[in-house]
Image (tube, rainbow, N blue to C red; front, side):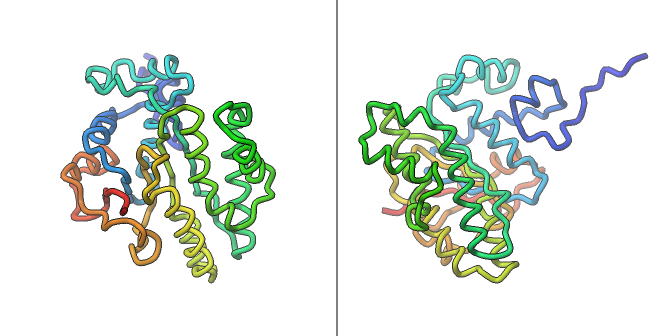
Length: 269
C-alpha cells in the first residue's frame, strides 16, 4: 500500500512552496494574529538556527504583501487565520523582505561590498518605483545610486530606510519590514576582527529604519543573538518583554517560553 504521508519540508523556507507542494506543516498562523494584536513597532525574535525563523517571516510576507494579494490569499485556505477577522489585513501593505544571512565575509571591505550587492538586489525588486509619479527626480536618482552599486557607505547606510520612504510615497501606505538574520554580519565581524567598523555601520543601517521612522508600519527582525542595546539598539527604547511572549514563543518553534528571547518595543522619540 502506498504511503499517504506528507513529505517533511527539510530545507524549505518559502511558505508558498510549502503550501503548494503540500509539505507537512504545523499551523503557525496564530502568530499573525498575535502580531496584529500586539501592535508593537519593532519585534525582535531570537532563536537558534533551524527553528523556522525564515519560514515564519515568509509566511508574514505572503500574508501582508499587496503583490499578488488575491493569489496569496489561497495559501491560507483551511488554516486557523482564515477563520478570524485578521483576514481583513491580508494583502493590505507593501512589504520589504531582506535577509542578511549571506553577509559573512573575512574583512570589512568585502563585507561592505557584499552589503551593497544585497541592497542592489533588493532594489531590483522595486524597479517599478522609477516610473512612479509620486517620486521626484532626486528620489529616482537616489534609487539608481543604490541599484547601480554607486553608493557611498553613508548612502548605503540609509538605503533600507530610504526604500521604505519611497514605498510609502508610491503606495500611500507605510510598508512592513521583515529582516531575517539581522545579526549575521555582526557575528561574522566579531569572528574576523572588524567588529567596530561593522557595528558602527549596522547601528546606522538599522537605526535609521527603526527609530522614529514615519515611513514604517512595523518591523519584525530575526536572529540567533541579541546584540546588546549599548551597541546596536542604543537608539531604541529598552525592548521589554511583551504580554504575548508565550504567544510568540509557542508559534516560533518552542514548547515552553523562556525568560528571554523575544523582545518587542516602540522606537524612541
